[in-house]
Length: 279
Image 1 (tube, helix red, strand yellow):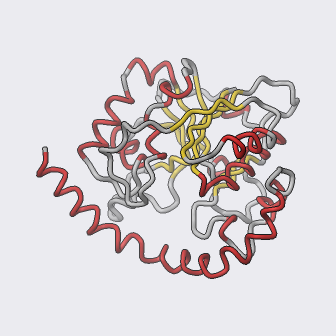
Image 2: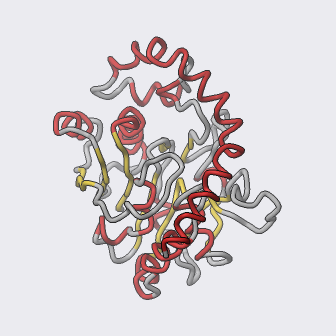
């Protein structure tokens, strides 16, 4: 099994909890071979050593390259775009599981790994907010926080090249997710919501996804399941710092989240206009 993710220094605690959850739950027998590939930026060597100690499986680290500079992102981070080039970072040729670094694994991922793609290039769960780029769109739209790649078909169809071209031409409010849904419209296998569940009270979740702000490491009252994972890592001492560090910031994030779509839409349209003028 091969797991792929990405993180920067602001997501270190999220990555630590994810790695521990993979360590504890990804394999029922504990004997399965698991590879983990992490693309990172601004994570130092000592922190990488601590993150490796979160998990018994060997982590292969790669640095974020600069070839995404031409792509726009409202958040400023270009890390999500690595999802568009899975082969580049993993060398995987058969299949691959992507997990966002704000998820935790709560059950075996074998059903995902053994998934029947039915000649489709990717599998994902539906996005709970549908298409954030067009709220009138009622077509199925997937969330890119958990993905299962059919790498053989991915390479045959040269999907990475098509996706990057799409991301250069269009400016999506949800970055990689917009490009993926645009290029793969109608060509994705829908997973049950338990594999990418934003409902943190649902104990049937196999993968819990902390989509909204504040993230657990930004909250005065972090999710207990997430806390249980982090408390078993070398970063457990950071737990005491969370309430004070983010007491004011978390409330700001919650308020901002309600306005970010309203604020980002005109910004994106203006950036898109400037980008088209340069073409």
